[in-house]
Amino acid sequence: MIMQWLRRFMYGRYGTDSLNRFLSVVSLILLFLSMITRWTAFYLPALLLMLYTLFRSLSRNSYQRGRENQVYLQMKGKVTPVFTKIKTRYRQRKTHSFFKCQSCHTTLRVPKGRGRVKITCPKCKLSFEGST
Ligand SMILES: [Zn+2]
Image (cartoon, rainbow, N blue to C red):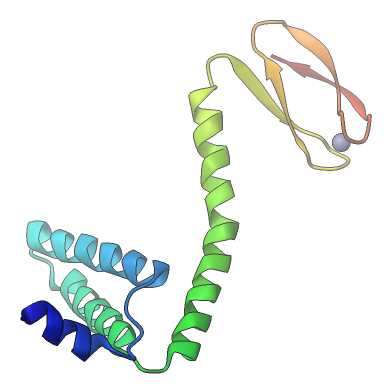
């Protein structure tokens, strides 16, 4: 009964997408922070984000909402590799040293504990010395 009503209510409306899921998580984190810190500075943004998320899922303008989601996915695609890189480096910090090629800015990974070594960039063939 309720499901039927909900299905009819949501008909033609945008529903949820990656951006909405992301916004929900952010607003829940903000709400949680405002609860533990009792700081209202987190509460208002959390509320506004929730309202915006609700507005997006009830919106009938699927085209515009889809475009917003595309922009979000593009930004996410740029940010995610940066975090992946930081995570990989942190996990390998005891076994590998990381160098940046001065010529093409490629990150080079060298095993640790070999003293001073000559490093050759596989991309542009530039050689330089580094201590591991
Ligand atoms: Zn290079």
